[in-house]
Picture (cartoon, rainbow, N blue to C red):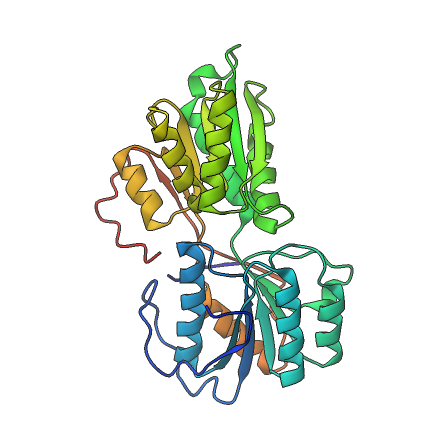
Length: 331
């Protein structure tokens, strides 16, 4: 199923009654506030590592307020142990529904079994998980990381169509996301799937930048110390690509001209760089998942089932595309 997409505190739980209106990542139609009255949702976010993540959190908080759902919001600060602790706190608090963005795919079986034993349905959001028993969680809502990687690869096929079938290679440097996270795995998989039939496309270097701007900068600076034989830089997110742009420009190179740059997320800063010609392609990863999460939480709180896999809508932004009518991204 595919439905349209819309649009932190420390490790301790933050009780968000969300009565006040919050500035919105993207305008959404508010749900009736009495729909969720009396329902408590425990939500564990991985952190606040980027503008994308901040918008994702804000979308959840706003949507909970609009639906009248009491939100227990926890920021894991990029640590799985903090998330597991938060989930156990939600179970002890006897929330009606748990939703969380998993930092990595593995390691959730025990705590999800505890939630199941307590009769609390769990909704996985944004990033996917790998468990032995699929019944440990009710379903997933989020972006399609594999398709995002495919879209990045498809752009390169079009960009370098003159080299298809020839001997001249297209050398790619890949800066990937957090190792073991579903976006890192999916984006790499989809990217390679599209390019695999064309041996001209060669990934000459791949390393994790952990989705952080600082690591993107450090990695690219180190890479440029040892090699300049690259035609493409593929970044798994905009945070890292902003650091990459800094490092490339420090060396006197023109990003988007001397080296083709493809990134994923579609933060405002990346769209601005695309318009300036410093990035060639931006693949959207939609952060505005809050309204759909609340709709699903209401269904689960009633004891009903949801679809196992739901993806939000996303698009791709290309170089030389007219983006004059594109509104503010909100992240």
